[in-house]
Length: 199
Image (cartoon, rainbow, N blue to C red):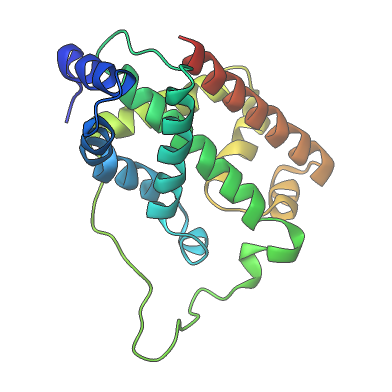
C-alpha cells in the first residue's frame, strides 16, 4: 500500500479538524501495516515478552496525543506513514532496552518454553510490504552512515537480538563501549523522530 498525497494529507487534515471518525479511519488504515513492520524487526525472544500489536497500540497513543498538541504536519505523500513508522521503531527500541536489562535478560529464557497447557505463542503470518522493508533499510542505512565497520557490526548484532556482553566478545570491545554506541544510536533515533515531528 502506498500513501497518495491526497489521501494522507486529507486524512490528517480531518484528524486535525477534530472529525469524529478520522482517528478511527487513520487507525484502521495503518494498523496491519504497522504490525507487520514491527513484527518483522522483532526477534523470537522478544516476541515471547511482548506482542507487536502492543507496540503499535503504544505508537498510536503517542501519535494521537502529539497530533492533538499540533506537533505534527503532513505535507506530502508518505509523511504520515514515515512518521508512524518512526514512532513505532522508537517504541520497539525502548522495548528492547527494557527487556534486555540485566534483571529481565531475554537470553536467560529458553527458546522452547511452553506457554502452558492448551496455549501456544501467538504467531502472525503478515509480512511487511516491499515498500516497508525499503523504508526500514533506509532508516538503518541512515543510522549506520556515520559508523565504522565495527560499530555497524555492533548495531547489526543488537538488532539481531544479541546481548551486550555477547556483542562485546564478538567485536572484541568492552561492554561499556557497546553500551555507549547503542546509547548514541538511540539518541540519533530520538533526534530523527523529533525532527520528523517538527516538519
